[in-house]
Image (tube, rainbow, N blue to C red; front, side, top):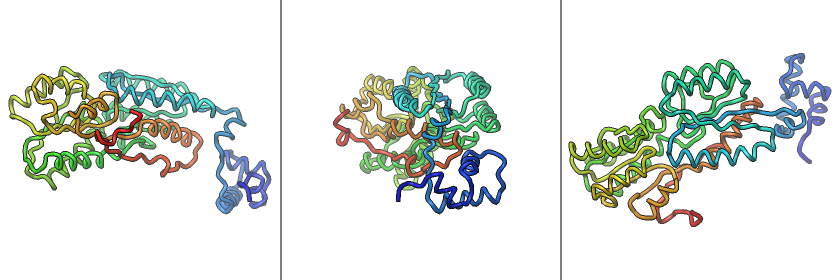
Length: 345
C-alpha cells in the first residue's frame, strides 16, 4: 500500500475532503466530534503531511529571522555561513530567511530589532544571545504574540523560547573536565577558566559541568574563578597576565567560548604555548590550526551545518503547527583531537 492520502482519510473518517482540509488547516466550522474522527483516522492510517508541498500548493510563504551577535568570533562567522547555505536551500520551500547581526554590546538594540520584526509580520525568530532581563522581556513579548522563538547554540530557558538547537552544554563541560583531568596525568596544578561572558547560558552550563567533574574526580586540581573577556582580545590578554601574576603558574586552561586567537598570542608572549593543557570549544579555522600545531589539546564541538538545518526545520514546523522530529534535531557532541581531525579539513 502506498502513502495514505487525504482521500484515504476522508473515506476512513466518513467525511468529505473539504472537512479533512478544514481539520488539517485548523479552520473553524468543524464540530469537535468530527475533528476527533479525522484525527483518529490520521493516526490509524499513519498519515504524515508534506507541509512543504502543502505550502507550495497554497502559495503560502514563511518569513523567519536569524540573529547573531556582531562580533569577530570565527565560530559566529562559521555559523553564519552555515545558516546562509541552509537559507538558500530553504527558498525552494517558500521560506524567506532574514540573516541579521545585532551589536553584542547593545542588548537594548537587540530588543528593538525583535520588536520591529514582530511588528513586521515575522513567522518565527531564532537567535544566539545572552539571557539578560532585556532579552528575556523582548522574547516573552514575541511569545505573547504567538511568534515562536528558537535558541541557537546557547539556550534561553527563562525567556519563553519554544525550542533549543544545540548540544547539551552541561555534558560538554563535563566532557572538558574529564579530558582536563586525564590530560594533566595526575598532576595537581591550577587550571584557569576563561569565558567571553557568563551571561551566556552555554558558558554557565559548561562551567557547572566542568566543576562537577573536577570536584568529584580530580579534587587535587585547583580551578580558578571564571575570567570574563567580553569578547575583547586586549581584555583577554590583561586578565591572563594579571591572573598569572597574582595566583602563580597554571597547568591547564579551559576556554569556554571564543578567544583562541588572542590566547595563542598571550601564551606565546609568556612562553607558555604548548606547555599547558588547553581545551576549547567549536571547530573554526583557528582551532583546527591550533590542533594541528599541538598547542590546543582538544576541542568539544557541534556540527554547525546540523545546527543551521535544524533551526530552519524547527521554525518551519512551529509556523505550520506541526510536531518536531526530536531524534532528527538532536545534536551530537563531538570530541576532536589532532589525531581524528577530518581529512577534508
